[in-house]
Image 1 (cartoon, rainbow, N blue to C red):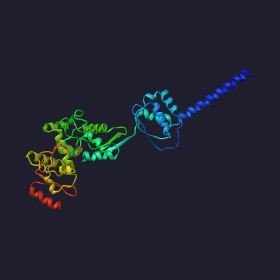
Image 2: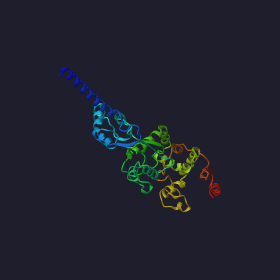
Image 3: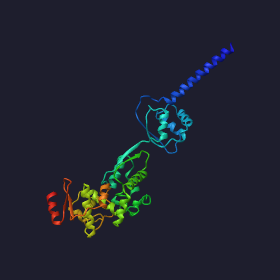
Image 4: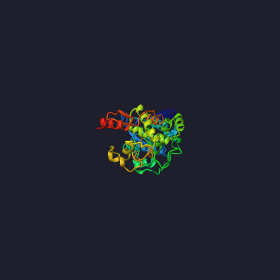
Length: 344
């Protein structure tokens, strides 16, 4: 047999084999497991997992064809050391480079949570549990028990992490400090990191000029937040909030009970009744003078500003009509007339 001809055949065979191998590798890397199948799959990468474990898990849930090809590609491209832990939304329509790019860039699944103005810890804890962010019990271990457990020994003390918490009694919970807003959290975030994110947002909202004004008035941030939490539950508009703030601070100044229904509703969870004014509780602002032991809700920025910048007036009394309008009165007689007119 002609040696030259044999060599030519060998070369052709080698080239053909190389073509088959390269085609296989190209298809394995760049062609998705199921092109056109756009169904999203939630895929978790745990902390400490490497390319080997990730590849095996991807193969198990049918997101890639060959785990070995994933590992080799991650190693050759240098991505194996940069795969980030977290939850991802992947699909069988994605190829290996696309999957790895998501994991290297940390395109982790995110979720939005919304804390509304006026919510208390009980409501926030229920909301987080209902939205599968974390259990109420775990949340209360971090922020303190709601009013039923007051005072509360916190498992986690955030007072040293944030300046605005330093005048808060260590035995009190974080009621009032979880700033109402919408937050974007990662699916992998634990409750502690979420609480810190919310507290950091509060810190940004609480300006240095506001702190200076509170210090000038010789009040504490804790007192302002407590007052703001009462105002948040009592009236709606910013202007009314500032007037009510002026009324409540004036009552404190003359040693008059605040007589705020919202503080009693906070501990009973029910609509106010005449009998409840005799309730034996430190949150009963009819029986006790001064501010309640702590905030009763998460106040919004308007309520905080109203507490810090009250509007002076001749009024000593107010009530909220069913329409939402606030009715102000100068004397108790005027107030009683307004009650008979608007709260029949």
